[in-house]
Length: 131
Image (cartoon, rainbow, N blue to C red; front, side, top):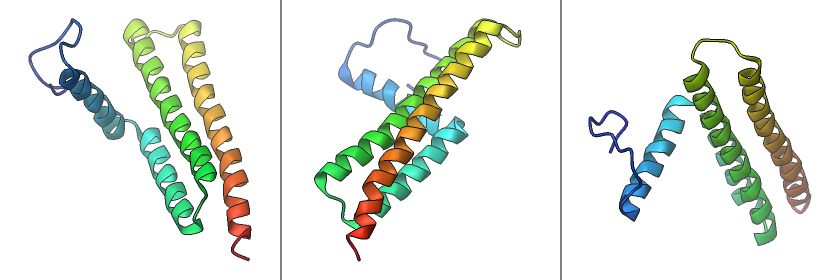
């Protein structure tokens, strides 16, 4: 089931494959429509490449992947909040709608700050091991 299918499901998924298809459709929509999600994917990919080059330890990989996925999840939740708020208020301004969007964006900022801290704590010692 793609985003442009005429058959529109309103009930629960009947099978794992159906659930998986919807999840993959959602990820595809994120990559296709959300510029910030794509930016986070690029930065995360660069961090993974740096980790490969620096030969991170298992513990360092755990922290790095946690930070990357936390940012991607936060951006996903931010996108959800924005879509639901826009669905509810449309083009009308409402202070609670603004607050919801701002708080969701703040969550992404917190996750990104955490990722920067983790990146520094993981990458700097790994770089120093080369010398």
